[in-house]
Amino acid sequence: MGKKRVAVLISGRGSNMTALIEAARAEDYPAEIALVVSNRPEAAGLSRAREAGVATAIVDHRSFGEDREAFERALDAELRAQRIDLVCLAGFMRLLTPWFVTRWSGRMLNIHPALLPQFKGLDTHRRALEAGVKEHGATVHFVVPEMDAGPIVAQDSVAVREDDTEATLAARVLEVEHRIYPQALRALAEGRASLASSSNENVPREGSA
Image (cartoon, rainbow, N blue to C red; front, side, top):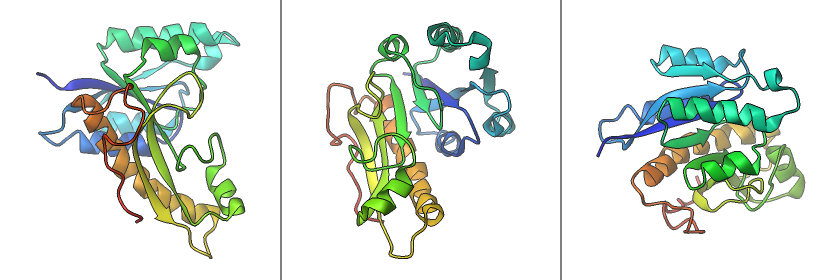
C-alpha cells in the first residue's frame, strides 16, 4: 500500500500545515503532503509549502463572487486532478457547504483551538478566559456539515494559568495543535479513525500538558 495523498487547505500562515509536512517526512508516516491549496493568493503558507518542496495551488474565492458552490467545485476539481485521498483544513477560513463536505465525508479533518464541544466558532481563547475554565486545548475532528460538530479524532489540553492572556494561552494551545494533528492524520491514513466512531478512542487523549 502506498502512502495516502493529502491536501492541506490554508488561508494564512499555515503553521499546522508546516507541522504536518514535517511529520510526513518520516519514512514510516502513512501519508504524504502532496498539495497545499489556499483560497488567498497572498497566504504566507504558500511560500512555506514551496520551500518544503510541496506542490501548491490557489483557488481564489473572490473570483467566484457569492457563488460558494462554484468556488468549491473548482477546489474539488483541483483536489481530484492531484489524486488527493485525504484533506486537512489548517486555518482555512471558509465555511464549506454540505455539497463539498459530503463529497469528502470521512476523508476530511479540521483542527479547532478548543476542547470541543466547548467554544465552537471563533475567538476561542478569549472566550475560554472569560468563562474561567481551568483547562483549554485543541481538537482534531472529522468535518461534517454542522460547524465544529464532527466526531473527535484527537484532543489534548493545557492548564489555564491565572496570568494567561489570549496570546500566552494561544501559544501553548498551538503547541498542542502541532502535536495532535499529525497523530490524527496518521490514525486516519492507517484506517484507525473513521467517521463511524464518534468518540476519541482512536487516538488516546493525553494528560494535561
